Length: 210
Image 1 (cartoon, rainbow, N blue to C red):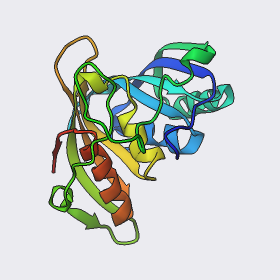
Image 2 (cartoon, rainbow, N blue to C red):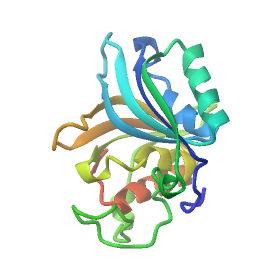
Image 3 (cartoon, rainbow, N blue to C red):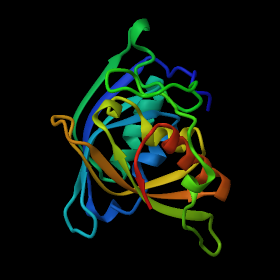
């Protein structure tokens, strides 16, 4: 998907509680790939290897029927929608959740919008990619989300721009603190899709632990 594509003028802010039984399912990824939504994870708490439910504060942007379909999908999964606000966007706010993939190269600064940096070497992209019989390739890694990236749909870029399926296996992101957040990710796709997705994260200057 071209990063210049502007989502339709509807924005949903919702707080969801995800049952423990879905902690290993790509729920957020499917909101993006199935319903053509741009999704920003504004805050999240999901513990690995726990019986506790996880929660996400999401911003969904897309056509009103796409947002409605995505909400219906969550309801079918018995995902609890704790809080929901849906607003029509004015013209000057329709780029609120613009994807970052494909943006020209600039250096990221603390006080500016994140931009892609073209300083990734081949060695930086070495990753343990597992080929699962009868399925696509899989890679697991942790990515750090600095505070100046919290208004940008980083995970959505992996799905929309590179065709990856992304499962969030653990997460800690609090929009009320100055601390960095992080996601433990399990991504599925072709080897080239995975490499391209990692290059995208690296060009954004994000720290990745494999």
